[in-house]
Image 1 (cartoon, protein in one colour):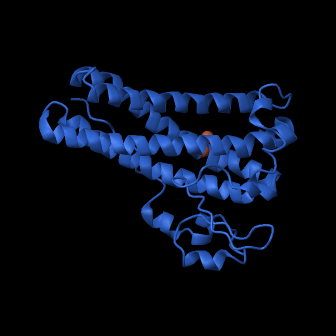
Image 2: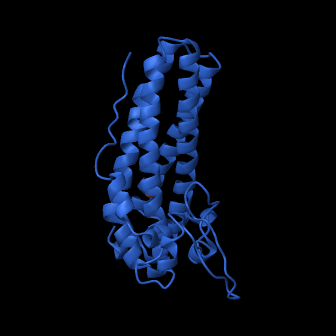
Image 3: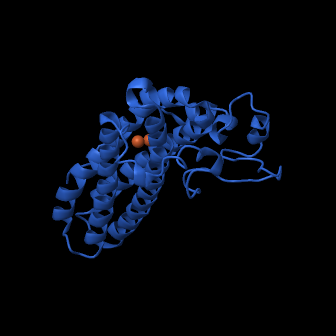
Amino acid sequence: MARLALFLDGGRSPDAREGRSAAVIAGFSPGHPWAGACSALGSRALTFGDDAGNFLLTDTSLDQRAGLPDDLKLLIDRYPRETWQGHDNLGQMARFWLQRHAMFRDMGGTLLGAVDDWREQKLDATQFAQFFVPRLNWFLGELEGHHQIEDVHYFPVFRRAESRLGRGFDILDNDHHMIHDALAMNAEAANGFLKRLAEGGDALKRAGDAYATENDRLVAMLMRHLDDEEDLIIPVILDRGEANLGV
Ligand SMILES: [Fe+2]
Ligand SMILES: [Fe+2]
């Protein structure tokens, strides 16, 4: 039986992640007056205070939020999604980047569907592995590379261009760490599942259930991340233009 590679082992150790300040994880710059409060509240991303000065506690971590917080919607409100495709400033880079996101959405759905097909016995073990393994390997590897390019190249450009959205890029950066961990857990669960495919029985059912849980969680987080990332970044591109931004 083909064995899935676990190739998500570099760059972001748990120690390194824990070394990041809670304030950064929560979306605050180190000097922000609320930064100190975050250390007592763990790694949940939080926002504080509404227009009336009331204290709010809004969870913006990837597995909890339902979209960008209101204070980060200042440009998406001016450039709603339905205007993007017809906008003159939606250039080649943005179109390519949106296509990549569309591919990740499609493949996420394909992987969920393949696991469902196996569980419903529409595919036998061999058919499932032949279909699933190359696609999952592609998905894990391409996602990891995509995030690295965003972290190193694109996020700094957009963060400099629109400082009012800086907290949004902290949130997206934290998303990447959460997705990275989910990718590693997905690969591990997939390896366990694939090893038991030929055995059958309860062990295989448990491994299949465990993998399906990891896969559902990863894909759900990825869909949320892709939507919010586009809502933050595409309006910056439309507002400034790719040539002016240097992307
Ligand atoms: Fe991303
Ligand atoms: Fe992305």
